[in-house]
Image (cartoon, rainbow, N blue to C red; front, side, top):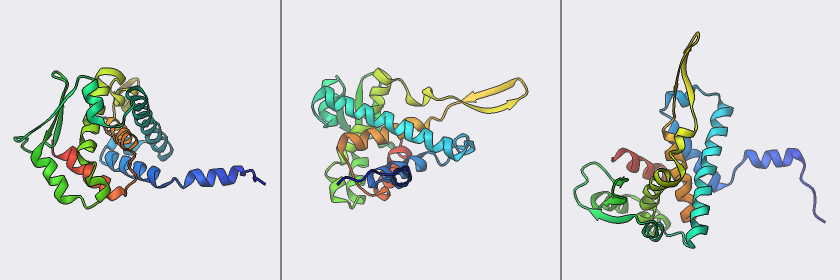
Length: 204
C-alpha cells in the first residue's frame, strides 16, 4: 500500500535538499557572499533568487544535451563553432572566453594547478571538461540566453522620488555553476566546488 505524503512531510523533505542540491546552494551562496546588494535582500528573496537562477543553469544544460546528444562540453563547443585550445602565457588568468573570436582558452599553468591540488578522483577525470563547461556557458549567454544577471534588477538606494538600480553580476556565475554540474552530472562535496570556484574566478 502506497501512503500519501502529508503536506508537512513534503515541506520537511524540501527543507532538506539532497547532496547535489546542497552542493549547489552552498556554492551559490559562497559566490554571492561578498555582494552587499545581495546581502541586503531578505533571506526568503535571496533563497528564491538563488533557486531560480540555479534552475536556469540546469535547464540550459538539459536543453544543450538534448540538442546535441552529448554532455561533453568540448564536443558541444565544436558543434557551436567555438574553438577550444590551450595557451601557456595566461599570467594570473585560468581560463577565458573570447566572444569576438568564439574561442575558449585554457591556460596550461592553471590546469596543472588544478591537477596538483584537487584530491577527488572523480573530479580529476573531469577537470578540463569542468573548466570548458564554465566558459561554454559564457558563450551561451552571449549567443543565445542573454546575460543571466541582467534579467534581475534591484534598487541600490532610494531617496524620495530618486532611485538607483543595479544588478547582481554574480548570478551569471551561479547559473554557470548549475549548468556545469548538470551538464557533467557531478555529485561531489561543496569543498571541492569551493576550491574550483576560487581558482576559476580569482585567477582571471
